[in-house]
Length: 162
Image (cartoon, rainbow, N blue to C red; front, side, top):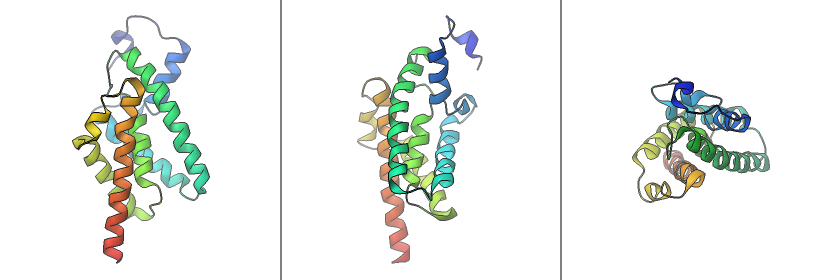
């Protein structure tokens, strides 16, 4: 996609930074599956930081949530779409939440697979969360999808270790 052709006016620095953040350092502009690439980014970010203490993970989640709401709202306006495919910070955070507390390749792989399935299918009430206005709507369904995935993977692990 040629972003310059798509946009009618030059971008401000704040709009450029918002696009950079919301697209996961421009990963969201790589076709054909930007959401999947964003989810991989979230899993990889968690893997890099998995040994951090709980409170630092909590700070990361809060920071990503606030940055995600603001930057995705701004990017939505700039790209003139309600929930642009290029915005993947929601998938990054959702996959991070899906991975939180998980260890090992198998658990992280399960988190990735189940997160993408839940995120794409959007079972009730995820689809309703998309209807929230602006950046809240963009972020909320993926946050809940990540939390649901985390619970699902935890139950699967408990079941098989049980």
